[in-house]
Image (cartoon, rainbow, N blue to C red; front, side):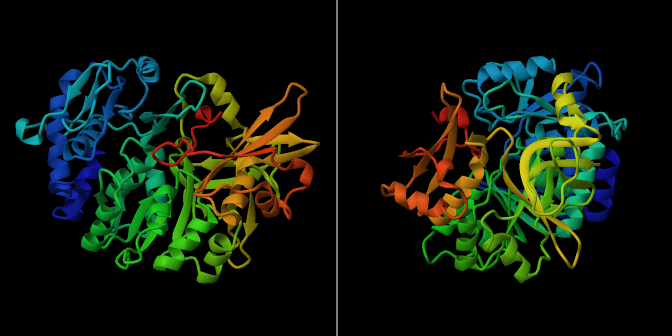
Length: 493
């Protein structure tokens, strides 16, 4: 990391690495600031470490101290555990005890009310000594460097271990896909999230790009940032796109290039509204913490005809094709590779796959088989005749299926159809098994109006036989989701 920082300093000394926007001021971190600031924080941190195997935890915030600290820990070649300040205390204790974390680093701006673990506040950079050691790291690119705890909707969290080599391979894939050097990326995704870190921090740094960080999303703040900074890329989740799609008619996004959407499924109706309102593409991306953020993405140079076919006219918008450094396959239950338009499990192999779950041999054996990482996502691919590339479509999760009268039904596929064909604000399907062993599907939906059963069934009639239709349709006030749009299924029933 030290050598990368030096190279970036030489190539782009006065260039802006990150701009942080908040209600009070705009703060910028140049590549030169990053170099010297991370050195000073590394010197402050070094006496706290007994050995380089001891992980440090950080609750990052949208501030320069968090950015300096992340790169300082990388300089020291010490693993970093990224923590969400809103992590439930029982889960936080479970995660930190597994890694023997003694203290959690956080900046003065982080709201830590309710956090019971020992916290160390990161001092302002001007409070640290200016004279520091010129080099503080020893390179080992294959050991665990970053830790992310999986969300674990019902079970215990698994801790994903990522190496620097894997992370930089993913950064290189992003650089090639978007020609990122010199580009501007606008995001409000939290830095403790795998996407927020790997795309807009590490990926941006590796590529010599400029990231603009919004601490939280608001329509006015987002539009103002677009007008002021003219970003090439807006890194978003679908819930942000839905707000933009329903914005007042005077809203303009002329100075933004295109959106990259990830973390939750993109519905066709949302992509259509963004295209109709603003003439902007939404490039859907897909990845997991286990695959170092993005694995696939709709390429920016996709033709308009192909974009319409893959996104705007497709019931299940494509998640794109594999980025550089990773290969994606569709496998059946026996591990045999399937051909086009045949649903199976989405599996990967390549440079951008995690080392494994930290000290969890049982789960590692489940997800790594015959050289493949098994995502537990179901999908299929279509083959582009001109390029020969596979474009992947996700139909659901292995565990989110219902079996009715011999049919296997993907709950996510029903959700896509209903969202595309019925006037809904949100929808989710839940399957419960009766005492007789029969699965029954319930549709929970959010809408301004009550919707009758016939309307729902008309949307499904050309895709599913009647005997697998949902048994119940229930209007609810809201569907519980994480800030990035993932459904909190444990809170549904």
